[in-house]
Length: 226
Image (cartoon, rainbow, N blue to C red):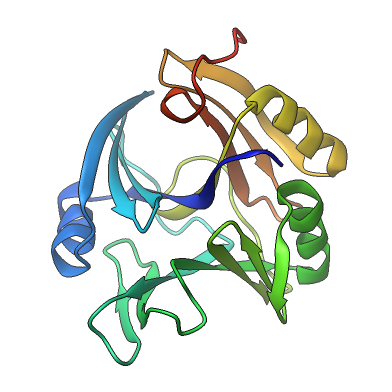
């Protein structure tokens, strides 16, 4: 996979954007970067996350709560602490701060699957993920900790909490086709968001959503694909 940046971005949907921003900005200290109007009544507040982006999506329409997700938590490397500190964000996502260099250099995602072995194969083939331990894979600087759960299920659509990951690529059309050929399911074919980005969505066998994004600020001109 031809990555446009060596980090996966984190996509959350927030029931109360004020509370979520207060938690991630004021409690965790993440810097605010920009507001993106993503269409469909979604305002995306983008925060810096050690080279990645934490996307706090606020919806004009009410969001359902309690939808199952396979994305079970975040661990973020942090300066100034000697032991891990555990939190729960306003939508119920566990977030742990851990000292820099203690297994995590930037961000680790806990990703549940009915078959971690199968998911690991898809990550290796599709995202060039490298194994870094038992059911631990690295994509760029991001570590994915795969957790076996025979009941793992990810409900599609918008819902409160940790809903998707984003990989930034140089050619969204080519990468979308390649991922689908490798066994990822197609959720949404590539579309352009004006002159900002072109995106698509694929899903793993448990339904977990992966956004494939070609962002003009990283790659230059976008594909003429609608």
